[in-house]
Length: 212
Image (cartoon, rainbow, N blue to C red; front, side, top):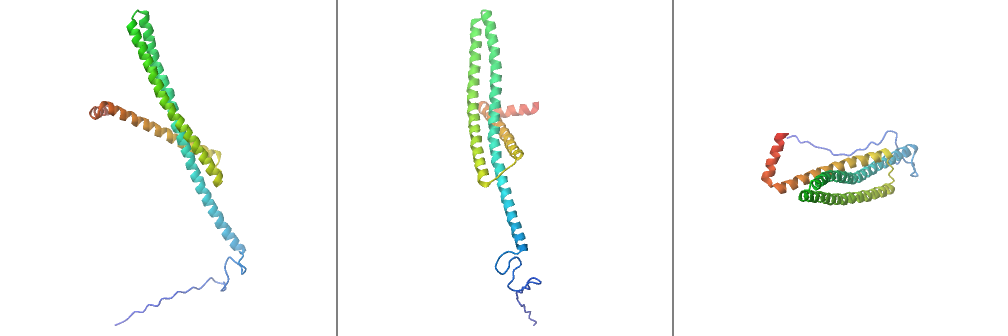
C-alpha cells in the first residue's frame, strides 16, 4: 500500500538585494530613508484626507437637518398667509350681505351674517395661532441645529464652501417642506375619516377615484 507523505515548511527568501538586518525604509539608527519618508508621508496624507471627507460628509448632514427645520417653518408661514386670506375673503362676503340686509330692513338676516363673519374671523385667528406656534418651534430648532453644526465645524476644522453649504441647506429645506405638506395632508384625511366614519369615508374615496 502506497503512503503519501506531506512535508510542511515555511520559507522566506526576502527581497532581492536586501541584506539581513536591513529595512527597506529605515536606516540602522531607525530614521527614515528618502523612500520611507515619501511612503509614510503619503499614507498620513491619505488618512487625513479620508478623515476630512468623513467630517465634511457629517457636516453636510447636520446642515441638511438645519434646512429641514427651516422647511417646516416655511410651510407653516405659507399656510398662515393662505389661511388669513381665505377666511378674510369669506368674512368680507358676509359683511357685504349684512350691510345689504341692513339697508333693506332685514335686521335678523343682517345680524346672522355679522355673526357668521365674526365666527369665521375667530376661526382664522385660532388656526393662525396654532400655525405660528409650529413655525416658531421649527425656527428655534433650526437655530439650535445651526449652533451645533457651527460648533462641530470649529472642533473638526471643517470648512465647506459657501455653495456647498447653501446646497446642503436647500436640499434639507425642500425635504422639510414636502414632509410638512404630506403630514398636513394625512392629518386632514384622518380628521375627515373620523367625522364621516369608515364606511362613508370609503364611499367618498371611491367617488373621488371615479371622478379622476
